[in-house]
Length: 288
Image (cartoon, rainbow, N blue to C red; front, side, top):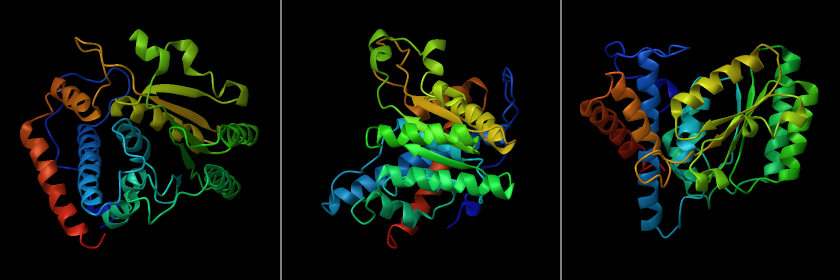
């Protein structure tokens, strides 16, 4: 199975509430939602398989990573470079990695992760090659929770800024630190702190909101393709605004509420996405 076989669901009625600044087509919104559901189903199925085979937990699985994977990767071209850990194959799945490879990668033991510094160097080299070829392609590279060397990460940011490379950096935080305890969202002071010394923009975005991530990623990718250099996207799971104020938003429920406000969400839609992908998983598991 390739990315080409995972086609968007049929078009749906126009939204009841138009977007404020950049209209995302309804079909794209449904596609974003369907990919989020697929991410959850992959990890749920992989968790069961690993437990049954005594292989432990999924190494880098977390709901806060789904919106980032979907929002950043969904519009990448086949020729673009995507650098992630083999133990975090969800972004590769969004780009087209067959399910067999995804399920095998989530096992972790069969695909040991190379050092973060090596992956960063490869991503920089790919971005440099894209720039020299003037092919308008870009590279993206992902920093894990705490397993990336900060020295290597900062060195890569510095080099990318100096050379104005066509690369998008994506970093994750599974906790929003003091912001979480205060129940606040990052303000302007928090938005561009990490990349400011390196001469290019950094944007902090709610890692639970796939639409917000998609908007930021679209601008960042276009920025790189135009030859304007790198961007850092910092995905932070902002605290829930629910009555208790505890915990983080579930990215799928967050998106369902967004679609519901636009008149796009139905339970039939959820069932159609789940049932269709469940059959794909059933077919992929024996090979994985």
